[in-house]
Image 1 (tube, helix red, strand yellow):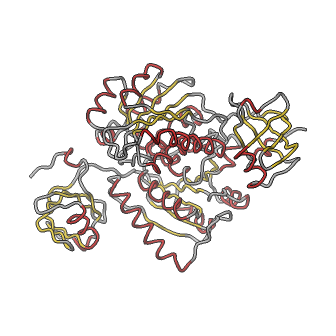
Image 2 (image 1 turned 90 degrees about the horizontal axis):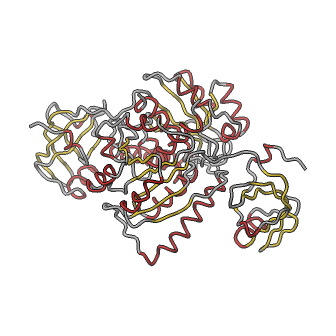
Image 3 (image 1 turned 60 degrees about the vertical axis):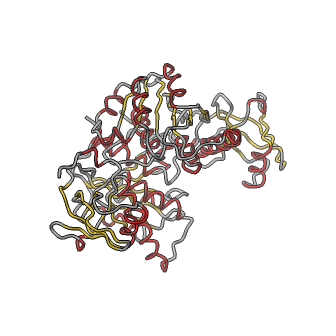
Length: 260
Length: 260
């Protein structure tokens, strides 16, 4: 059967591992199966949207719904593409857990391709290495749920580096590198971000580096600039650490997706 | 004595009612006095920044610090202006308290001139009128603290209307009215916001209308458009209710403050 575009509205979306797909069926298990059968109370005949590891989304009609296993018939694929053409990495100096989770959720909504955490000189929280695995799983879950909710086709990669230097070591992978810092806001670099935005090409890879609550240390700020980061400002007001990524991503979305 | 611009960095800021000022002194009391003397542990000779009701900021040197009363000598005024030339009103359909408080804090950081709440058709929370006064005071405190932290010279006005219609009744005060909604994101109105941004003049007044968690009802969406709101999209991804105001304000800041 043919699915209309408006059916897509508010239709439940699930990212499903490639191993769970055949050419014409898809199987959802565990937490996702529970969500479909118990939380959403869906049953045979209902339609969901499933997305595979390559970001291909398809309408899938439930054939059999059990609490721990949902089997679906794969119908036609969706045409709409909600992914940005550019790849944006948000590198965020460690914040308190709730703020960091918030950055992961919002950066995912705004289209980030990957989110990398690192301990910054002024980071108040010191992450316990023993807890890293647990934290990583939690951030991945937040990114997956946020990607489903915002109707994305890809889940941002959640990564971790040992320091700002480690983040910048990989900087040659990127066409553009920006450091967003209080200093820039105070030093009237107000047009720097416009110059940087005008250089963007649709297929570029861009690295955005954000400081922790206390901002970057002078050492970090100088290191970033030495390693090719352009210092850019988001305006004359001082933004909280967790606010800056959303504002910066909004400008990138505007330039690649909304601008004529 | 002469104050250097960089002294301004991380200097504590306080909004002080006009009644507490004389030509050459300013007096801080209550919570602010407690913050200065106990939290910040400042004493005679230390310098703070005080801002009056007209948005004039001055370096003020503490003459006498008591737990409940701080007397300062008013020194020179600050030159920097962190206020946007345009006036932006964020009209936000009622959200759960924590999300709404978040919108107040972030909209203040991003430069909003006023923030107006209203009950929307799909608002999950129904505000208890008895609690309105308490809530209003709480939102004003969040706006004041956020304005101090982001180094603004004005505190956004916190207002409340009985419905979206009430908000739009005053729409003639505005040069531009936008409704930001999921529908726009799904209907490929992707260039509408660019057309709207290009019409902005530096001294314009603009009204931004945002829906609650559930989005706008068809009735509200049509009413807004009938009353002259331009439907605009913030991109191909569906943003959570509390994310949209930050993203929209970022684009306005870019257009009036950052763009060459």
